[in-house]
Image (cartoon, rainbow, N blue to C red; front, side, top):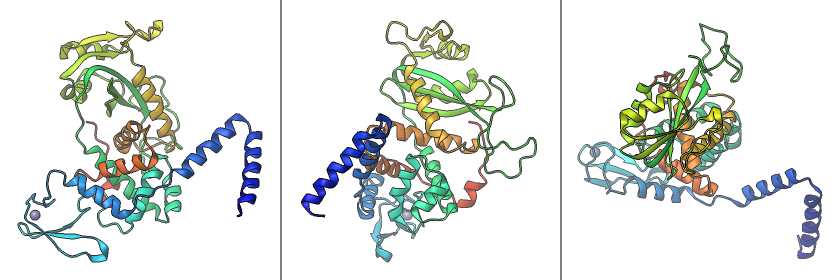
Length: 348
Ligand SMILES: [Zn+2]
């Protein structure tokens, strides 16, 4: 294209965009942004970043922690190491969710599909991998993220619970009721044992915990099990009028600010409110809806993944997927495909 025809094409394109309605113009803007946010992170750069992060406390054998490690060749371009203490070999991604996979160049694009909430089938088509591979990668990644240790809260803490309908998606042998189609609805009104209770706690530094608590309404014991280890530096707990949070705060010896939502009391003294957790709930539901219902046994894993994506919501897609992938590679990931399929739903 010459300079002149490029100018003409640009003017024509602008004329077409100018004639669109406001909603469509925003869509054009979003697709342009996605187009320009191209990822230039190469596999070599990723492995480099991974090595920096995994071995930030010094280079050691992932099997036995010994520092007596020697280089052991570079088959297929991948650096191998040998531990002279335990005699085992390892590579830069031993014990990561992607050990043994053959397509390291597809990991970062895979993260993007996950962040965008693409179905397994669409992800597989886009990346040219089998659906079963996409399934394994997704769940190895989610499991790995769940293994990262949560941090403790500080200052004001907002807590609230939200519910997801119990689902056995993927299970072909449901015996005690007719399978529901794609999410579906509960046959009971209100909060029943068919609803999975998810607790969201968020401090004002935006540190967020989001976890499956129990089936049916939240109770004090479950609230304690989930939050007590992390509230030493909490100054006050804000919640709605659910009595569980009142008793929980009393037991923990923490000031409790209770908002009476029925009387439309949204804030006390201008700072005590639960608007941050409520906004988190709606972003979470929005992201989860893209997956057309997830099996309850995997719910906790999806929650952790969303927590990561949401914490990085202001960073670029490139930074977001790199951070997600690096984080998933930090804990030791032992499971295989068969282990993932046969996972059972266990309450904490
Ligand atoms: Zn070793």
